[in-house]
Image (cartoon, one colour):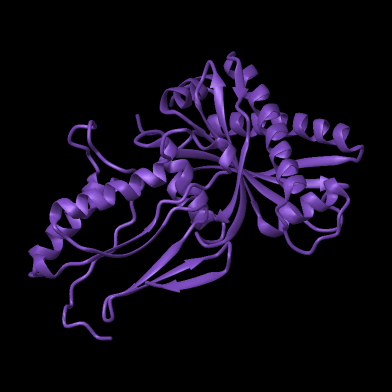
Length: 128
Length: 206
């Protein structure tokens, strides 16, 4: 499917939220900061904010269950932070592949809007 | 303080500590399995931790990673990365198996963690003597995934600071590496304050 919407962005972030961290020197490191920056940049380029949609991938916990803490791990918190920020900005979340304990790598095709998710460990490939 | 470049004196000291540490580790491994084990350190370098996957053959390369925290009078993280084939050969040698690729089960997972434990303990012992501090490794944990994902896990833990890693290439020789080469990378990621203390001990901050 070709979309009549030539704008898109892809962000790779490390930490859930920058709250309590003051004005961080590198907001792109945080989920909420990166989403805001991306939306700003897209709108700055002329994208219609009303038409933006989002897909999120990742938020895995790489270690075995015995090391999971009682509170949510960083991965789960990152996914939560992404959903929260998107809701706040009024951007619909149309697809997600989060959690588990496998690392993922993604490829975003701007023309079709398709997001390919590869997982080397399971040698699998999904399209979102 | 920028510490991306070590002086020759400091690099020498790091190499020396690495050789001593790996020497201790080799002895411990030999005693454990009753075979001759040699550990060589062909290369020592300092690199930003985010660049590590690129140095090891790309972020999508499958690796077994063992992680430990440094506890005691200095803080930091230790990460050991073994390419899939090296991890497989290492487990074969230690468990007397003949697998073609790494099969992660209770035995292999435990073996890899124990190797991590021995290497980290021996290394920290040597490093601690140099720094005149008591350094203790935490319980090891294991992950098997793409190099990029493993390094992300460390970066998440580090958060803001201390993103330089001391990268110590480690080659297993003797009876273990005879049939198939076993190579791993040992990463020491001290927090900035610990790195400073370490560099002081290793010949002063330039």
